[in-house]
Length: 99
Figure 1 (cartoon, rainbow, N blue to C red):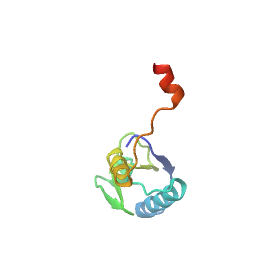
Figure 2: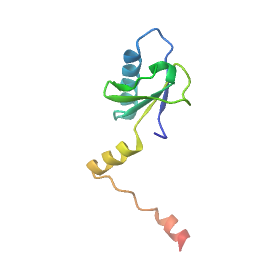
Figure 3: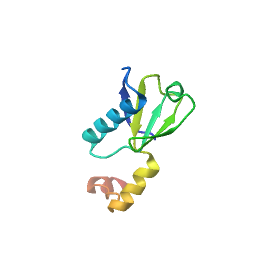
């Protein structure tokens, strides 16, 4: 996952509640459900799993109490194929520059 939303939550809520809230917010904001949530290793204590339909994994580059949530590139390309999304053609002015 290269692009995502960074969610901060230092409340006493459980990990399940925190991830579920982040998933709901992401879905409302971007109109699609995320596939992955990256968290600091201390958040999972060595375990990984699925919460609210999202794969939760450790990432050392995520600070404690932060949740990096988004769509994995492989999942994004698979979704695009299912929806029939194709790359747009370059704008005409871009084609002229290339000539």
